[in-house]
Length: 176
Image 1 (cartoon, rainbow, N blue to C red):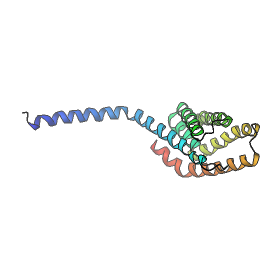
Image 2: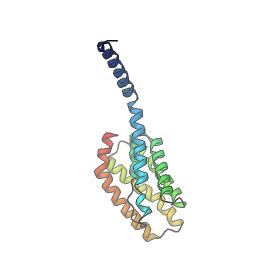
Image 3: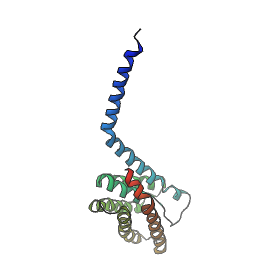
Image 4: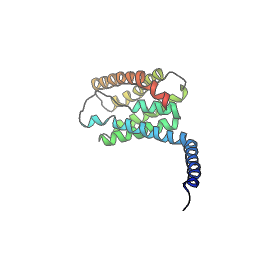
């Protein structure tokens, strides 16, 4: 039987190799984890619509799209925006004409974020949420959406995003 003393050097070498491998792939792993988390929280954030049909809109799709675009680039932002929008529409059984305008809006947000990546996250986030609504509201109205419904939807969404981008976004940007 071998002595335990010969086992420890092998264990140390194996541990060192595993640590080096993890460090080598950390950025890729972190990217995947963050993007998957952003998609998950954005998609789940609209789940309440399954129980409460209301024009009041509190969701994290726009927030997740902006964070992904600023932290990881336009492709990540576009993917997070499109995937979370489609998942939320499918889960909420609202995959209709509104999905198209939402997808166009989040793609515009992700693309625009690239031009202002160095901006303050609060100003950038609110500006991009306004851009989103400037794009989607005319489309929604053209499809017959009620103006009062739309005003409540946009107002509540702007208020919610004001809070999220002022309180949570600065912290999130430090860790992504």
